Image (cartoon, rainbow, N blue to C red; front, top):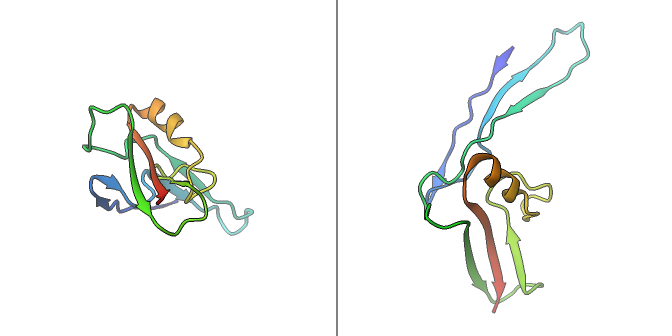
Length: 106
């Protein structure tokens, strides 16, 4: 079994790489090759605005096709890089308060 070490980078206190990956196991060559990834529930936002229920930031952009475009910051979205609301389940499981980055049309 091979272990994987994931390095986490932080920008403004938010994790910028997929966090919490545990182990990847590779069976022997005689077995069918399968890969297993174990994901632990950990907070992504260790210190930014922890008194707020959910940290949501917005940026005004002049050239967007939609009025508001939410981008995922929890790394759990099924539509990554766009937010699908997965942060709500993550926040409930971990006590975190991470929310999306909103790009707003000017």
